[in-house]
Length: 367
Image (cartoon, rainbow, N blue to C red):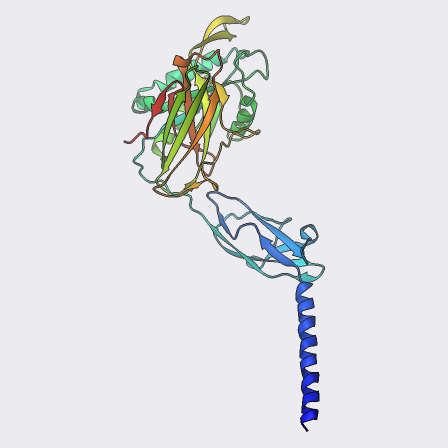
């Protein structure tokens, strides 16, 4: 009796073991879905990237990833959310379904609130020595900035001129100009020289017919697009005046993503320029607020650099970074400045500040 029981017990245990082994084999044969980030913040990130593996082998390209929340199959393995919420995904490979993965989409984009920091506005001017209409475009811009309705803002408006040699001679051209111009052309189809861009948010031409868009863009920058960070910038040159250590600090009032663009801008440079009255050009034209160098990392984009690993600065926190700037011999230091632009998560200039290249120190501008 005991032997019979033991025989059946052994058989039963063997059967269980066999089923268990088969279950392990079946589980191992299932695809595994993973994602690079289970939480996406629309204020900083735009995509979640999925990977499908089978027994450690990457089979993503041969798999389908779809959302069980919306019954939407992804195009490839990238999820680009457009609203907040929890999204559940599974993958299929060779007729087998993977585990489920959840992605929580949040949005920490700050709402417009009153800030303790003064607003500083960046105006980009697009110009060229070959452009006979550009001097008149600058005069139009200067006249608008001198308008009585902008009197309260004039000290906080900072012009930086990007020169181009794409269509002719310009001894002050920088290579990045065309990339920045293309970026701003997306804001204003048909953009042409002379042109402006306010805070990388609004762009337009500076001819007599088109300059009417310029003043409203300035007024809106100060009244509608409020800052939620402060910017402090210092620049210390070495004893030989051949390099400078530039430090930018950003203090955030609301948790948000930021990138910083640092420019070297030189004012009052005498140089060659065509005009409508001098088609052969004049040699002693005074070029104003000329961009001489983009200090921050540049790779065909004008997005700047993060100050933190993920780009975010928490409410009430500060982040900073220091760059070394090589000082060119032709720069007149008393007329040369550092512009520090802080871009928000949408790529617009949220705030900025300016200091002298040689020993400048501009602290946070508190109201």
